[in-house]
Image (cartoon, rainbow, N blue to C red):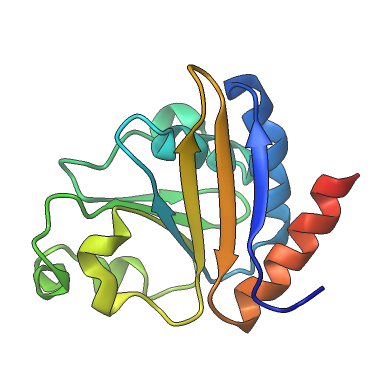
Length: 162
């Protein structure tokens, strides 16, 4: 496999998300940063709910962080930070959100609307683009931007090929 390549995976409906989310949860390192890109209604929060379930966090506790900006969930296997940066003007606004404290310890960080804080994104991360392809179908594109997440995408490719 060529390093730093995009993996594309299609799901026909929400019922197919747990397999993808469980596979992703299995390959992410203890300190992972996942930047979620997609239109309104693409399913960013729904996907985070499925990953949360895969790491032992009650998915009912995972709600859109649009107004709270950052939600921290402590699970059995790890901490998950779920953030929505839609309401921020740019990365300079991060200091007011508690972001640094939220991601100071190892965690799985999932950020919706990461383009709002582009200059603050870590160099080694996983960019996930969710594209609406039909009323219930979505295509997920996983693009690593550094070696840690590149290794995760390589393992994810292997898990999804089975």
